[in-house]
Image 1 (cartoon, rainbow, N blue to C red):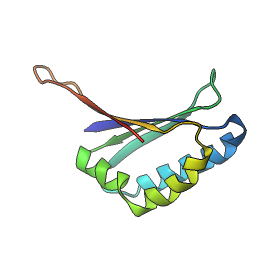
Image 2 (image 1 turned 60 degrees about the vertical axis):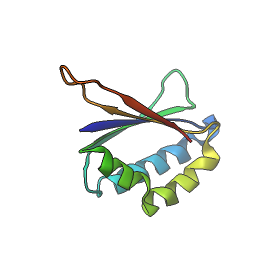
Image 3 (image 1 turned 45 degrees about the vertical axis):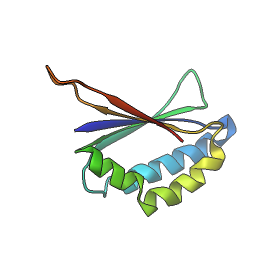
Image 4 (image 1 turned 60 degrees about the horizontal axis):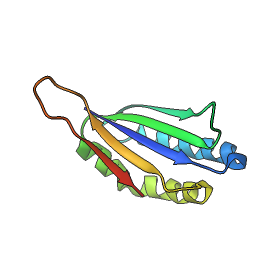
Length: 107
């Protein structure tokens, strides 16, 4: 199982649009093989900061969703709202005696 954390910063006056698009992304993701759960969070202290946390069965399931046309279509609408590139970090769960790594992707 893996967790994917995506940080996005948007123009504060475009928060309503961002929320709608991120909810659309999550709705689409829930229909994909390997999706387990997700949360969309908005910072109380920094109105430009959005955090999406999703849990997937494995990295292959996440990668399939990440490359999907459904995700691309909505991501193209999200991009103009951003003030900087999104930051994607993939984590695996810690297991005793196993080396753990995280993978960060700046777009």
